[in-house]
Length: 263
DNA sequence: ATGTCAGGTCTAACCTGA
Image (cartoon, rainbow, N blue to C red; front, side):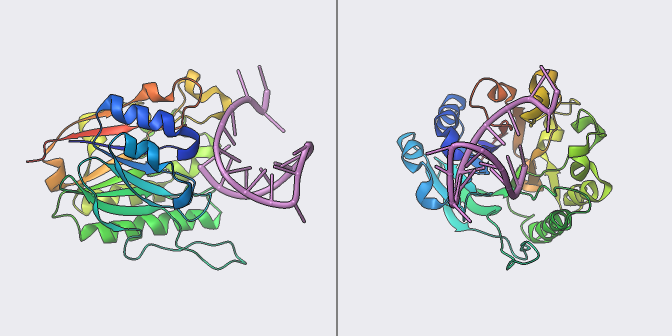
C-alpha cells in the first residue's frame, strides 16, 4: 500500500493537480492538510471519479484536513482526545480543523496540521507546543496498532532539515522546544519513517513561495509520517516527490510517500 | 525587488495567514 501526506494549500485551487498525481503515483491513501474549505466546497466529484472516497474536516477558509482512500475508509473522527483550542484574545477559543483520523487499508491514519506558531512571543507558538504535547499523549494510546501520524508538523527537527537556521521566518520551526516536542514522539513509541528511509541531509518537503526559495534550493523538511512500531516494521521505503513543487499551480509543499507491506 | 500565494470582504484595494 502507498500512503502519502501532502499539504495541498487549498484543495479547490489544486484539485486537478492533486488527483492527477494520486493516479500517476498509484497512491492508495492520501492525508491532506490545508484544504482551506468547508465540506460543501470540497471537490469531491474529482476524487470519486478517480476511485477515492474522502473523509474531511473543514470549518472555514483556514486549515482543514482530509483523507482520500481507495482501500476503504471507516471510523472517522475529527479531533484527537485533548486537542487544544485556540482563539484571538477577544474571541471564543475553537478546536480548529487540524486533525482527522480514519482507518484505511488496515492502518489507522491521522492527517495532522500542526499550528505554525507565527513567532516565538506569539500566543500561537504556545498553542503549537500544546498541540504537539497533547497529540503525543493521545498517540501513546495508539502505539500498539499500525498507526500513521501523517502531516505538516511545522518543525524542522535538525539543522540538516533547513537551508538556514538563521532565517527569521523559521524561528518557530527550529526552536529547542519545538524540536523537543517533535522528538518526544520517539519516546512514545513512534518512528519517523522519512528519516529512517531517506536520511540524506537537506532533502526538503517545503519551499516558501517568496524569495525564489525553490529555485535557490532553500527549503525545509517539515512534512513527516511518524509510524507506530507495528507500522514501521512493515514500511519498506519513503519517497519525497520534489517534482511536485515545479511549475505553475504547485503547492508550496510536496508529497511524502510511504510504501507499506500490509499483510 | 518587500522577487508569492490563497481566500476573504463593507471587493477592482486591502486584509489575514502561511
